[in-house]
Length: 508
Image (cartoon, rainbow, N blue to C red; front, top):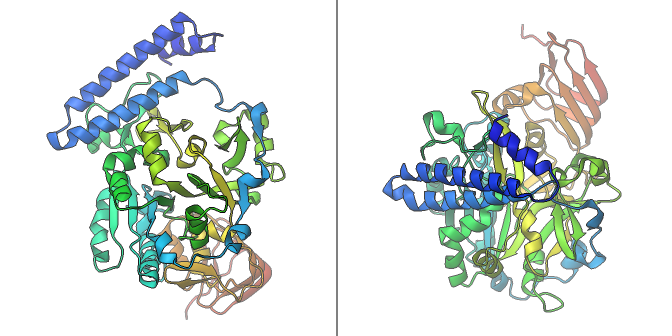
């Protein structure tokens, strides 16, 4: 650890903000400011303005990072939210729809978070361009959903993609294919912030380029960046000028995040006459969701608490399904006017997530991020709505992909719904081993997607392939040990079976 940082951490460990601590902090801020100014001088004239905004945004975030000490929540102040602050979806739905659905739809803008790459699934380029169902990508399904709304209700709901510098170019190339769709598509870019050296806390980048050695020097700072980037892009003012009132924000890989007319009606026509500025869709935790952020009451306001903010001694309590029953789906409905007001007052307060990374060359860096849902406490009259699990259908792995490609779901106008032929509305638990991690390997191992209507649990490990028209029911565990291979034959029906050892089917 550098002497500079040792001094800083030593000072920070002392009680009280001593003068010494303050001097060190100011020196460090000054050093970072100088480095950022150097980087800015390397920007070309067309990059200058947005680079300046990005680096200014980073400087503010870095300033806050140096001010904050210890866990950002006082566990003793965390309370369960009051009953009426998280409404059951059934109650919202029971109010029905207005006579004129198009009048509320015309007040809506759909925003999809499209900054992520498909690297965790072994794919190059934006994750939104991975095929998930009948050759349709995440982006195709999103466009189909909104086009269906616009045609059905004769409306003009636009789609906005928040890209990152990692996804922008590839996404824009593909957008031409939607020119004839009845959806106006807009894009804006997340900020591009410099990663900082874990030892010196100074930026790794030496200039604005992000190719060559500089590829790893930059990062998109989490989806909490949406407020500043959307505002800076000019789109916020454009939509307000067009009479739009709410954005529906969600992750593009959550196939359950479709426009819900009942929630939209609740926003536009609240029963008590007082409009919500921020609605977070939450859903009941299962054992698989214990790490998800949860809504709490904190100092009189709804507050999202993430596992990273929880003091170590209370992590098990945080994971408890009985105390914190719900988690954030990241489907959010937010007032445009409120975003404008808070952004102009510099009043959007989001906890900083410190994300440590190791670069390819072995350098340890940290990146400072924020999460979009954390801003809930800055908005007035916020509300949680406890929605059915079907509105949370994220595809993070090929195990998730197998579920959405299967006959468990039917596809209609870009929306996936659970098949009526499935007796239980729950989703089976699927765990595919490391041989299936990459999409191309996964596709090679299934000649066709098995019938999974009666499946409860599937675990597959090792070198396993599936023939055509396989049917999986109950609990199925298939384990090929190292050096063995298992080929599940075409037409096989596996019901409550454990298959292990070596099963090879050879053509003769």
